[in-house]
View 1 (cartoon, rainbow, N blue to C red):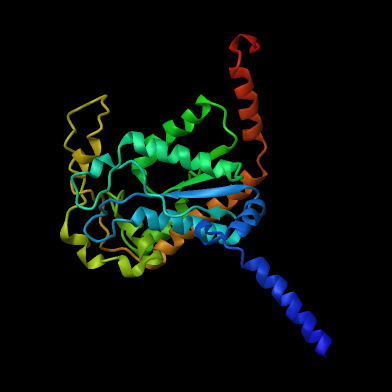
View 2 (view 1 turned 90 degrees about the vertical axis):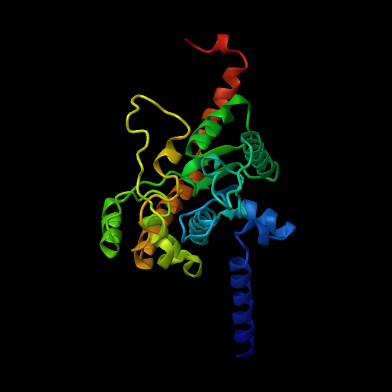
Length: 291
C-alpha cells in the first residue's frame, strides 16, 4: 500500500508540474520561459488594446481586457505564451475625450516593431496579434505589409475572426437589435459584462448618445481621418443599456474557438515562413527573379 501511495504522489507531482507552466509571459521564471518557448512551438500572442473612452459606462481599458480575455482563454486550451497588457496603439480619433492615452505614430510603430524583434531574439518564430481595438485596423494592415521591408526571423500573423450569424442572432435575442452597434454598444458591453462584470455600469449607458451623427453625409467619394468624430463625437457607437452577460459569453466563446483553431494552424504552418524565406532571397537581386 505504501508503494502505491508513493507512486500516486509521484504521478501527481508530474501532472502538477506539467500543468503549472504558466502561459502568461509575466508569470514565467527565466528557466520556465525557455520551456514555454518550446512547449508553445515557439509561438506567442500579443493581445493589443488601448486606453480610450468607451461610452459613459465601460472602463477605459475595455479593449485591453477583451483582447487578453480571448488570448488567455485560447492559451488555456492550446498552449501559447501570452504577452502582457499592450496598449501602445493608435487612438488619435479620441484625443478629445478624457482618459485617452494617445502616443505618436512614430512611437507606436517603434514599440511594436521592437517588441516583435525582442520576442524573436528570445526564441519565438511565430507571433500572433490579437487586436481588441478597431482603431488599429489600418495601422496593423500597413504594419503587416511593412514587415516585408527587410528580412525577419519570425512570421507575423494577425487574428481576424469572422462573424457567425447563428451566434450573433442568439446573442441579439438575449438583448436587443442595436442599429449603431460599433463601439461600447450592445455587443461590446455584453462581452465586458461576461468578462469583467464589476467594471460595467449598464445603468449609465443611456447618459450619452451613441447614434451616428452622419455629419459628412453630403460628401461622396471621400476618405478623411475625421470620419469617426463626424459620426460619433461622444466616442460611443450604439446602445449598451440592454447588454446581457449570457449574450456576451456566447460572443466570447465564438471568438475564442476561432482563435484556438488559428493557433493550431499557425503552429503547424510551414507555408508563410518558407514564402518569406523565398521572398527575401529574391529581393537581393530582383533582376534574377524569373519573369
